Amino acid sequence: RQRVAIARALINKPKVVLADEPTGNLDRRSSEAILKLLWDLNAKSGQTFVIVTHNRELARQVDRIVELVDGKVVL
Image (cartoon, rainbow, N blue to C red; front, side, top):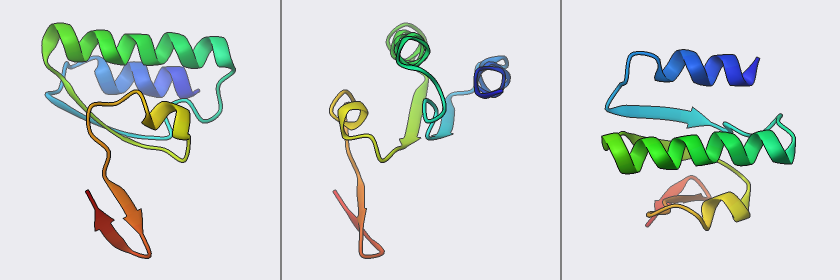
């Protein structure tokens, strides 16, 4: 289901994609494949991905981190 939702979100090539825990329910191999796809799309087509995650390992891979701490945005 999650992979289908991601495919639907990407099909029309939007400039910005909002993704809430895009790899949350996937096994490690599938998660890595999805993230590689997102990074490649960002690099090749300039699509922006806003990803919400609790996964610190995933967060370390992004260009910019914005945290929500006690209800406040922290850059």
